[in-house]
Length: 567
Image (tube, rainbow, N blue to C red; front, side, top):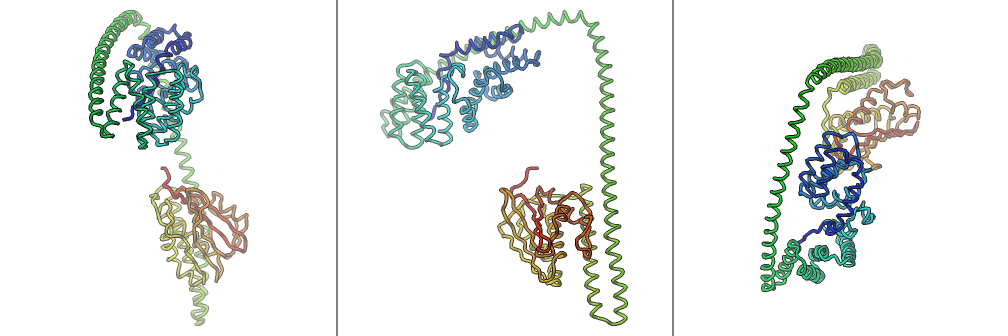
């Protein structure tokens, strides 16, 4: 039943609007195409307005103010022709410092309201709500109030809608604007009707119908009569409903007849436009004949431009080739740097592990010959730790190399942290038992994050391995989550081990591979695992933090997104 009224007073203030258009356009009337577009715009010949405004845009786009005027003419013409998408595109192309930009916002709000995009329409109307009728080029403020009310009504913010619609009605009643009041009464009646407040709605429907009896505007008569028919049908007063239905059909037939007359007028207008187009075509043909006399100069210009274009092409190709060579060189330098880092790690840490294993095996042979089984047992455990460290180093080295050479595969999916932690912690049961370290998984089963599963396991393996490595017997490792930032879940691996100094903590957070100095000289490590963790956390769109106090333990914090990251 809702019938929306837009700008009922716009025609009464046309002269004010036209005068402002003439004033702003005055400096550009020397442009032939624009002058024609301007004339047809004032005459409301929308097809001709579109033709000549486009001709002006294609011949001169350097003057921003002139371009804005042409786009304004086009947006206005498209709107009057009911082509809302084309109108919106034209208005959105206008710069914000345009003289009639408040009018542009008004038109965009109207288009969005007609397209039922009430939220965005409301944004435009609220931006111009405080402006006066003069600043809006003659549009009455009560129409702005009414449109804001309609937006709130469709957004089901009924209290706000009622306030704005009542203010609009009060202003229209003060101006005794009969035609506009019919639509306004219908709008507030519908506001109450959709809330089932029939006792408030029906008097307004009746007011709208009573006013419509004294005008000749068929659409308003038709809407008001149709609404009364629906009201009487809902009240089960079928005799009255039938009477209103018959009257509605009468006004509907009159409106159809009026539309037919309008269609004939449109056909005549289109015929006139075609005739003008023929005149334009004849003028273009005359111009071509004149231009043919200048062919000699034209051909010379073409040859010169061709030579210039060829030179520019080869210059650009040379620049492009040089850029490719520079990019390839930078990539090669990066790969060489990666290779050097890999060799540095292999030669330093792997050699240390192998040397330690060699020395331990030599002692093992001696103690086996002496049948010193207690010492043999100690050495076997030592060898196991060395081999495990070397294996972890090689595993990290492989994953880091894949990451650096962009060969690793990442698939960000939703994961339950508890089960990932359980899987990784299970692999360390024997080592934890041997070192008498208690590991507690306090992660909630409901905690979810978005990350790549395999890389998250590698991150956890390295952090847990470090926690075990730098913990003393009888120490505790606790894994839990905390929420410090909206949209992120912090996974915390906390140990009560030897901790680290502030200098070491800062060094570990730097973008480097090999730690320059270790506080515990007996523990073999290169920092590659930590570098791998930082790279993989970054690729998972997460962040990494360390909290530690020397002698009191360490917290390794991996912050991951709880919402799927874009891209």
